[in-house]
Image (cartoon, rainbow, N blue to C red; front, side, top):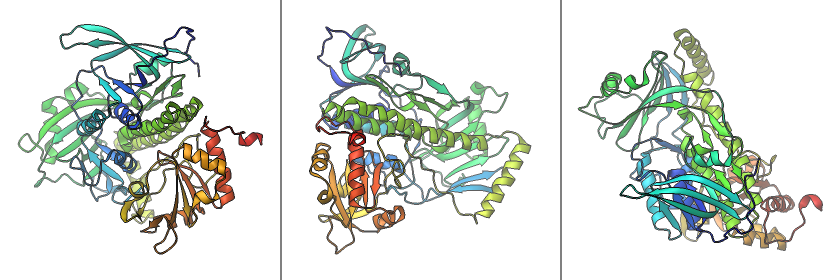
Length: 544
């Protein structure tokens, strides 16, 4: 990675913000909120004068529900969010089932597998939370034009357009700048970060419909894929009172003509959808792409969300990946800005997140190559193969896909390390609910039947205190424990991975697991060394 920072001996060290975030979409706003909740000064800028009020993403998974719960958003009971106890169905043109994916169950992270929402409503919720944080400043009509680094920080220059159309040049001096400014990211380009293309291009027409009442219409399953070579089609919810249709643009078709209002209603005719029972909210053709940045950091500049990766929507993970970026970056920046860690800890952000999104991009491309078949003979061969495979599985629905982190601050070779931690229903101090709500979030060591704090060294205890970490002894009702494993989730999980201790990070990923106290201590030393804590004078494990 080439570092674009230059040395300016007389540089002004008075910062306007700890972090300047470019891009006021869900990724940038969530990052600003998470940092603002920790008291860090954040200025978030966006070139547009007002929020974009059209739908884009319509679904998020269990992990994002867990993340949103940090902000008090309860996806199970929020009026702007819906879920459906139904499978995700794939069917061919004859209506035969090709594949069923389990979107009915509670995922290991303790939330439902899949939720449906309106992105403008979610973004408004995030902005409302941001507006309550005194250390977060939001600037609109602010167009970034220049970015320059030095040894002490980064200077972002832009043009602010007033309500009367006049433009004024402004400068924001920050310790770090994060580009969450979309696929055509100014920040990514200014930092010289390569955005590699992986050769996946399909144009699809997206139709978002407002349909408060669908009674009397036969729309098929709640969420399903019609694998018809004559017109591959996706039909899914779009949040409460909304439905979405996605149609592949066929070879030789004019995307502009296909997206016209007349064409739109013609495409919807087979579903009985007309202007009498539905309102067309948006009609737009998008090019589905597969891209990611090789490096996500250059000095004091970082990227997140679509600025760092683009994926086809077939797995429903595009926005989810961006929100994961925000959480992974927020806890690292918090450590650095609080003076607890050196900024080397930021290097693992990109390596971990790139590995994670690569998995979902590859997965999405594999799904797309199955779905986007427009040749009848090729589709027939696909159908026969998938029907045979479904029969061999006795019709058992496929579990939803899960990804692991790329290399970083977790111990490879540990069972479940680098994966999202399990969450179950627990009880403590008269409260019953999900572990995050009852026992708390952040750095956590969970011990089965053993209080982890009692087996840590004095040095480790100090490090854990510096991290605001907690130690939790979990067990069954009637045993000597801090937290009762009400539904046996943790007992089952720990048995499966052969562990009695688990180290969980603030982003809910497992840093390490251990079968005994000695292994826990060794694992914790390795994790703490990787965090580059400035509050401890420690000899690295490898040098002992």
